[in-house]
Image 1 (cartoon, rainbow, N blue to C red):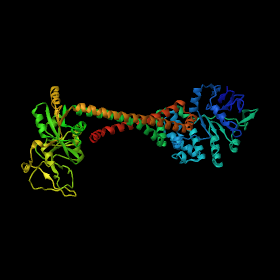
Image 2: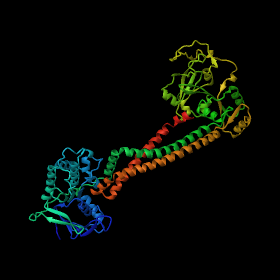
Image 3: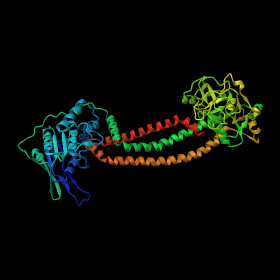
Image 4: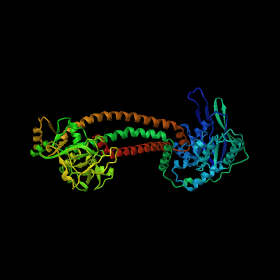
Length: 627
């Protein structure tokens, strides 16, 4: 048994080409051997099959009958794959550098694939290797900044980073000038490892002690090993394979790092992939969740009121105006209708007059009972007690940075109408606690204050103050000194109201009220709960249509995502092949792709959650604007 024998390949036959009657055959008639530390140059004319022979030896081309022995131990395919990762290095003629890694990261790549924890000595060795191949200071260069010859030398440095026992190179000096080719040849000959190098370089051929030739015999290619320096016997040298005893790091961490680098390099493609997922899934689920939440809010607010009274007209306008304070130009009822309703003593009646605005927010005129039955709490101050005092919603106060004691003005309905009433100065006596309802965005006052804004009452005080606008309008102000001077013209029972909310827990009272006003010629009484149910059913029909369109869009976007991923991975097939050449198992390659896809979906899910949270942070605004 030869103690210096490193690699032994049993005789084999391999056919080149797809057709059995055409092409060439590679035949190894005797055991092909590589001794420990042996330097072999592999020659033969271009295209004869040298690269194919090397790939057969390494196992990059599958050959089920190939039998390999490593240091006199027969190797299974799995054992050979491990050896290729740890003790054999290969440099192809295409360099095989990863575009999205810089020079130093490319050199240290085998450590990451093996999961070996990187140490300062690894960095120093990488820098030393760069210096030895004539690339000192190139460690932070990007691959696209390198020439062909520089790429070859970086690939050689990467192959040597783990101190392999066997180094196989395919034309490593093909793109080098004479000086650098001599440098690399000298470096290789000085290494205490076995080397098999494919080369057409005359100096390399002359200086290597052994030559392997692939010659053609009767349509058969036969490798022949020639001892060019028969008088020189190789003495094996002790080789330090320190990485075998190194602490194993976390290969998963490196794979995540590698995936992040790839995503950063191909960021535009991956951005389109993430965008496709977000648009296809995020919008669909956000719309579904948001619509469900809206439906719940709409039903909850409607169920708080047993009945709703208003002038005969659009039932939906009556509902939206009374619950969400939208000016739907409702036909008005009179205070007399409220008085008659109260005389029936069926439930608690709360009048609403929604006509005017302050800083574009609705002014809702009502009574104290409204706050109790809507379960609204005062955060600061107190409810209004006299004309001209208002309570503002939480969001309205936050938006305009209002505090107790501040004043606001009612908006002028027609700025240049000289017959219009002056704006009314309103004093804030209370700020509501946040209720996440339309009440957060309105200004509440008593009925008389709203009627004064509308010009149904006025005082005879001297106007003062100035609104800073083009028409130089003065304003009205109600205070304790002039409140007695304000009086109403005509019959107060004819003063306008928008609608009346009726709160009652008694089914009997609700039935009696609905029966009494069922045939009323001017008034209608509706159940907000039933009206909202009808309205939601109409909305859901539109929602289902929109959801269907979004779903179709989602399917299209998902197909686009799959196509982009497929094209991206097809484009990077060379990269996968390289990973295999430098020792990555197929499982590791699969893991790298899996991690990339997982990161894509993770980023997409985070983006979807962001959109979801954004939608829900603005849901009150949506509800305010659309209802």
